[in-house]
Length: 333
Image 1 (tube, helix red, strand yellow):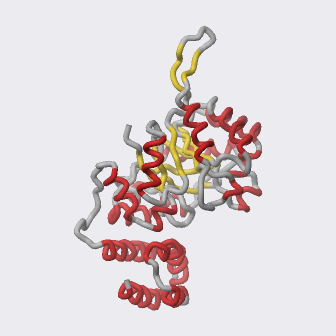
Image 2 (cartoon, rainbow, N blue to C red; image 1 turned 60 degrees about the vertical axis):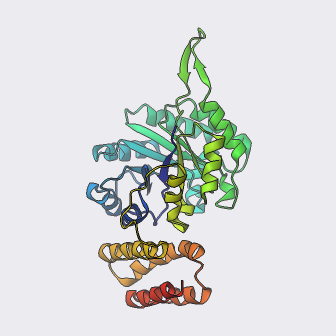
Image 3 (cartoon, one colour; image 1 turned 30 degrees about the horizontal axis):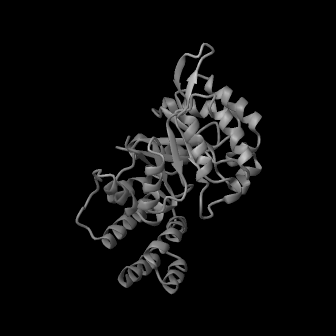
């Protein structure tokens, strides 16, 4: 089977402005995950990001971050009414403020509460529910308990970020723990009369974590040939061409505009598309610059921008000053 490629939800980064610019200049993903919705109602920002006209030609999956089943059910019904058949439950965010409220990865420390939560939402007549999860807070014993819970529910897809909460985003993932899930997903299920019923419900299994190169992707592809998907996050932000390189290795076409652009010109066209989008979307230079600086914290690594030029860029107070400094960086590469 051909592994699908997903864009990870990255708070404040993978907005519809970014998604559309990426699709235009670097090619399309099979799914784009949008996060994080926390309330029982969508706020104006979330409604705007999820408008159909802002996501043309993209299969977008909203992600909900909550430990309250009523909240999840309410917002999911609203999303279903908007045309979003799949909604993803976030059980992976390691942020201290999120975990302190028992959400994201913090919910994983309360397995019985999590089981009751899943019982509630899977009995509510919702459409497809997928889950993105970490392995637990800090130990493999937690992961064993969580797998016993997950296998009891008809999860559309279980996407595993193969780190514990304590790992945050440090280099390295726990492949031996992902392998446990892979083995369970492939196990046959029997009824009390030993009649084969099929595979476990979450046969669709996704991988996330430390995919920074084509070689990283190929290790997953060769080691776990029945994996349904691989989700790209920081590696994709750092190097936009990573998606195209993976597709090329898979012998898949990668539809994108201006195919003849050099890597450098493609990046700066991509940059300008995002900048112009935020200039239209946001009010005030400060808000636009905040968005762009967040992206440059990733881009600097791939472009190897000298520290002095980055320092000048970060000092920019206006969009005009920022654009001037960007041109200097472009000329230095």
